[in-house]
Amino acid sequence: EAQVTQNPRYLITVTGKKLTVTCSQNMNHEYMSWYRQDPGLGLRQIYYSMNVEVTDKGDVPEGYKVSRKEKRNFPLILESPSPNQTSLYFCASSLFGRGTDTQYFGPGTRLTVL
Amino acid sequence: RKEVEQDPGPFNVPEGATVAFNCTYSNSASQSFFWYRQDCRKEPKLLMSVYSSGNEDGRFTAQLNRASQYISLLIRDSKLSDSATYLCVVVNTGTASKLTFGTGTRLQVTL
Image (tube, rainbow over all chains, first blue to last red):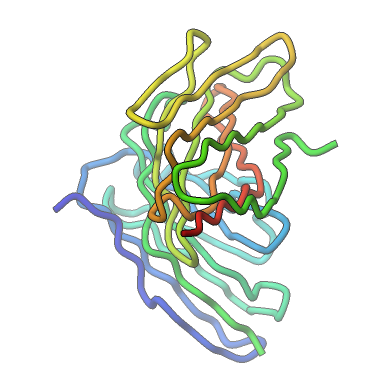
């Protein structure tokens, strides 16, 4: 089954404790991205990747890091989480990142930073 | 002004009703448009693309008005299962296509 998976699905952590949210897709997509969704603000892009070893900032990259060492994986790293990073996070992938490509979203990771 | 604006709703309609949502966008150079559906706390899923000539898929019709910079979604014969949040997505194509999401319009279909 074609899918995007994320882990963990739920995470409660404390300020300053480094964490990684994994994202994996099995569709051989070149383009992957991370979004956060907050009430009243919609989905905002954090980082995206056009291909292996190619990453770029989205609209809200501060406080986040990403890496793309393999085509299928695109982990999101919070080196020192803060309460304002409490949010619902979605990973997404598409074939080439073109405007006409369908975006496939992972199930989401609900992160709470205390 | 937000890049993409939607009425948050909720739109409360009875089963069988016809309901329409609009979404306005600010960048006249935007090139692709979509409607996504998002169920509560779940991932967004593509509902349909929006073309200048209009696009119909069963009970759903999407329209694009470039002159007035808005897109619309019409749902006919609403079902309980249509209850969800509908996200308008506007794409500006550059080196990498940039998707901008609206905050969504919530639809609640009731008996």
